[in-house]
Amino acid sequence: MTDPLQPLDDPDRPTYTIGQAAELLGVQVAFLRSLDTAGVVEPARSAGGHRRWSRSQLRVAARIRVLVDDGHPLVSAELIVTLQDEAAHLRDELSTRPPA
Image 1 (tube, helix red, strand yellow):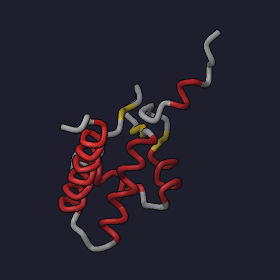
Image 2: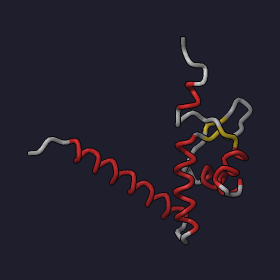
Image 3: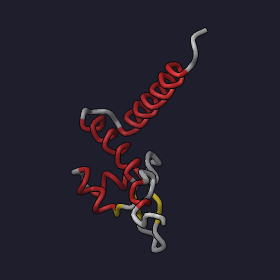
C-alpha cells in the first residue's frame, strides 16, 4: 500500500503558495516575486496561474535573502549561491573518488 502522504516528503514538490512561502521565510511577497521575475528561483504555477514554491526553492530563497540583507545585489547573491553549490558538488565528487 502506498503512503498517501509520501509526496509531502518530496523537497521539490511545489506545495507552498507565495503567501505561505513569504510567511515561512519572514520576507515580503514582493521579495519572492522579484526572485521569480529575475529568474533566480522559478516556482511552479497552479492551474490558475498562482505561484507554488517547493522546500528546495525556499532554501535557495532563504540563502539569497541572507546575502541580500548583507548588502549584495540580487545578481551577485544568485552568483554566490550558484558558486557555493558548484563548489559543494565538486567537493562531494572528490571525496567519493578513489585515490590515484
